[in-house]
Length: 368
Image (cartoon, rainbow, N blue to C red; front, top):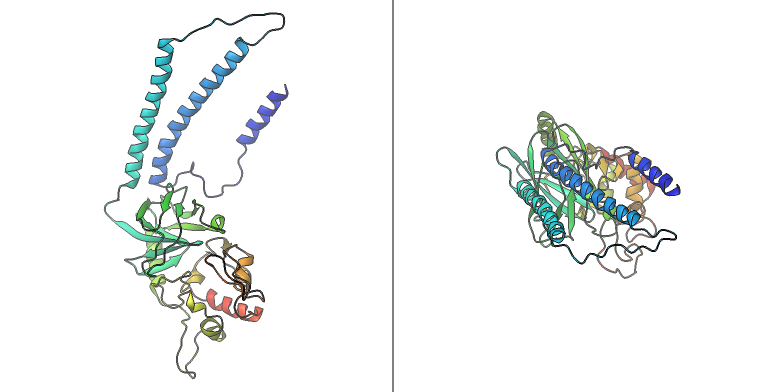
């Protein structure tokens, strides 16, 4: 009785459905994802049938040949059955063969390079964010991959940045469940995947291969828009920064206002980021059009002024991102320190005041 109640409770819980997290591989929104789903559903049904058949056989044997009180009954001894042994060897082998044939065909179909009007994108996996290069359009952005609907997008996946010689990262894995399957991003190897969205919308992706402290936070978004909206987005991204930085004579105007000296000199943000040129790859995300994005920090936080100020002051307190004891000045670092530094009293550089953080945040939000 207790077992039946527990089983019923489990079945009820399994039927409950929470809010859609945007990463439902059973909700395909593009041709590649539908191809995977068309393979998954029949294989799943076959597995369920086999599982139920085996479980029913186990339960039947357990009940049929159980020991009964007062009855000393030995079951009939069977020393092998050639037909049965051949059957339960050949039937599973045939099932696996059929599954293998369709699986291999699907793998080759998904790996085939698309023809025709194809948008080319290069995705560089870093710790712990994604850089997206549009080579033909001369646009570089981060963490938000904007694509036109009903257009095949061939995404070249790499862990090495061609614009930063010798700069290779660890293994990552690129996964947008509603649009395509997982594809590993391996240093020294060229991998690729094809994305296509049927309808406008935002499709959530993430790294699916453990890559360090902030692996769970290494997210990104694929934003599908109409072709006309995509063309306009590209045109906007190709423009120079709305508020360019300027370095030159001391009497030269400062278009970025008070933030210019903070970004260029005091905190030296340009050592890792590009602020003026939207086509440049850099060690950190290209920020030439940060204000046009909806998220930051690898898509982990919504782009708001208050959260951006918190990030500027002490990013490692919001998202783990440093290996070794990199934050304490004078302490030896163990391993490679990656990610945004802390500008608090415990950080390795100058201490950032809230006023400075506010001025830099306002400047960044104006970069649209």
